[in-house]
Length: 144
Ligand SMILES: [Zn+2]
Ligand SMILES: [Zn+2]
Image (tube, rainbow, N blue to C red):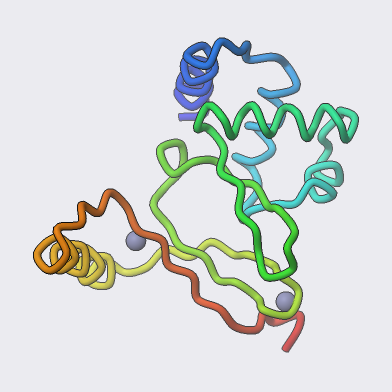
């Protein structure tokens, strides 16, 4: 699976005329191993062996080609995760105090209800829904 991901990221980068450098590959590996969206300091703690400026640049390039998503949480800090095409459909638990994000996979019945909401939007407003995002905002165990 991990090899497939690298093949996809390589293609995504080529399409935007960028190369899959060792630094970018390392970031994809770290995001693959992280269990939630991570900040730049967390990426450095996880072992990203690159300067903060290369980190910013590499993440921006990975974001531009569609491999990585940047999320801004309640603390206004950017967090990064692999795009859903490279991971799995999920939603986020958002701590309104510290800004921490956790991934959450919802049961099929709820996903089904969300896709009915998309049908509703199409019927009522002629709006074509391609995807959805759901954030459950509250207090994480560390802040409780
Ligand atoms: Zn918290
Ligand atoms: Zn969903």
